[in-house]
Image (cartoon, rainbow, N blue to C red; front, side):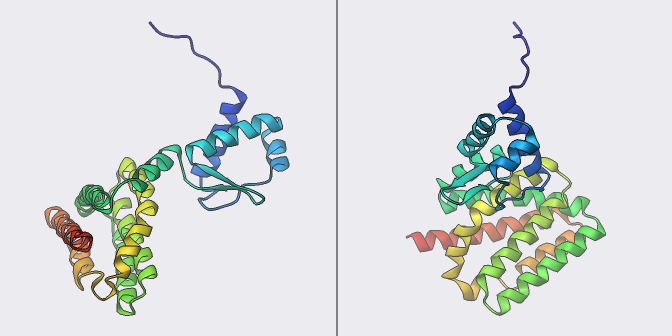
Amino acid sequence: MLSKTTRLTLVDQVILQIEALIDSCEWPVGQKIPAEPELVEELNVSRNTLREGIKALCHTGVLTTRQGDGTYVTSSSMLGAAIQRRIQKSSLLHTLEVRNALEQEAARLSAERRTEQDLERIRFFQQECSSFTAVHDIEMYVDADIKLHQAIVESSGNGMLIDLYAHITEAIKESITIFLRKKVADALPPNEHHQLVEAIAVQDAAAAAEIVQQYIYQLKQEVEMEEN
């Protein structure tokens, strides 16, 4: 039996409006949101309604309130916050297995669907990775590496895959950085990114997926050795 539809409460409307601001990147992750008086006026709601909406978003992990400082955006969506909390409870090995599944499919789809503009972006971040590897700047390397894989994922044209990967990248970035600090000299095989990018460039989907699989497998082996 169908239940009757109900109108959104004012609190629900506040939540939706704030989520829209975050989703549109008007309020990007890491930004401090406007002060309460400003939001009350802009949203045309009472302080209590606004506080309830913010409290709900803090509970889900989308916002975080810092005592004496203000409220900050900590995730781009409730789904993203939930995924980040789950990843933080997972081992690095399990995280790599999930990354393997997402990046293999992204590489395959990228090889099939990428445009010349996509390929240009991918090559740019490939060069960034090579440059930072050469000088052993691991923080900058990891940042460029994440951006490279994001560019590959975005060139897949699959909106759901893009959203899922966007939520997983920040959660794994810190753990990957900690691991690679111990292995700066061989953080990445010299031609690994080159092989992947070239497979995408010639639109060899099977080879692109296989290269990702081999790379993640190698990382898993190194993690297992570190843990044993």
